[in-house]
Amino acid sequence: MSRIGRLPITIPQGVKITVDPTNMVHVEGPKGKLNCAVHSEIKVEVKDGKVELSRSTDDLQVKSYHGLYRQMISNMITGVTKGYSKTLVINGVGYRAEAKGKYVLFTLGFANQIEFMLPEGITAVCETPNKVTISGIDKQKIGQTAAEIRSLRAPEPYKGKGIKYETEKIRRKAGKTAAAKK
Image 1 (tube, rainbow, N blue to C red):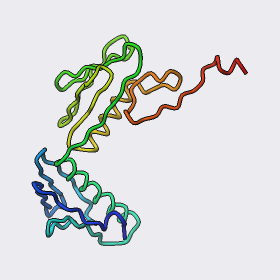
Image 2 (image 1 turned 90 degrees about the vertical axis):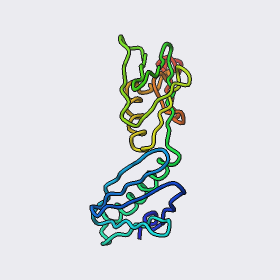
Image 3 (image 1 turned 90 degrees about the horizontal axis):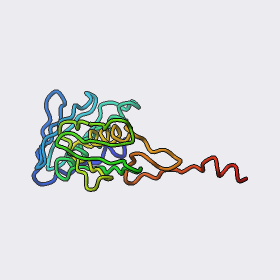
């Protein structure tokens, strides 16, 4: 049995979970609503303030789904209660960001500014011109948006210029002058 899938999820106060006959899970909390379609081989039950998942067969793929959907429902519950956020740091001379409503304007050393439109349900705050915090209730959307912003100017290994995650370590390389000294 899946080690993660067999663990029950406790439902916190203020969160309401419903399961449709079509195996669609709806989670509603103080920060908003999220939906997730669950595979037909996985059965979701809400009872006694807990969510329990079970599977119909022991196929390898179904075992994988068991743990996956348990974690997705757990992430949805965390999202509607606490929310998620990711912080991006911009390094480089003249590189900066500015949040304007549903858009974030990036100056990244190109001829023109890049105007990045945020998806529905995602907000961005620029604490400083070099730090952007993306937040929302959907963990997958936060990660995807952060990855798309990072890909606008990925960090390069020589000077470290570009957009990186706050916790990311960039492996630096020595330039060609270091090789000539040998």
